[in-house]
Length: 300
Image (cartoon, rainbow, N blue to C red):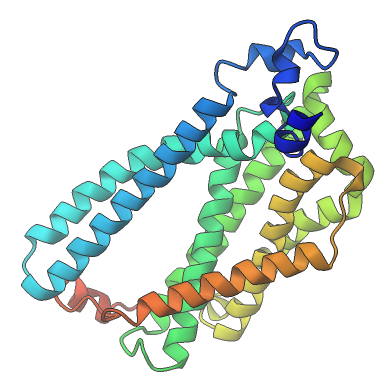
């Protein structure tokens, strides 16, 4: 009981009772996955993910600041090569970390599309963060070189990646629903039976708002529309993660209340604070970037 209380409130596979033969909690399926899903390997992978991201992040930042001082193209192309290398790591880690941190909550369930689906959610959330941060800084006058064409490009990316996420959501749902295999449909049955309105509302928010409001060229250049759509997508993807985590760990007993909303707002506040504080530590314009002039005169 002590082990279950300590570990298994989110990841039941962390409780050794489920992998100990003879124990009344023993689960053969969980035991079969124990070579990958075990406490030691889980934390090793987590440390490797975070350490890799941190190393690349500090390297990119260091070289970017150095480029501002030195100029030339050598540092730019070095960052370019490091970026290509990072994509290799991120392509793998974005999938495996989603298996570890999210999919393993529903330990009996799996989907070969889950890594791609989670990656698309990360991508569109990052794009929304970039859009809203750019609009905010431009409004305050800190990004005078950003023009409507830049905003238009950000709007197009938001529009496109929202469709990618929607496509992957529907593909995963449709294939599992159509195949109707018992060990696969349980994931959706639990969520639809207990959170039907919330679950499909999440999809509608993330799909319909970008599709209907960002279709036109003018909308992609309108800061008010982009901000509204961005806020809706943030809410929609928060609900997406909520459905992954709470529905999987607490089942029908989970609900959205002051604690859940308060924790989300607390994280958002800390995130904004950290980002804005770090933006004050260096120039916002990469003054010696070799493509700066081309970007400044970008028109579409």
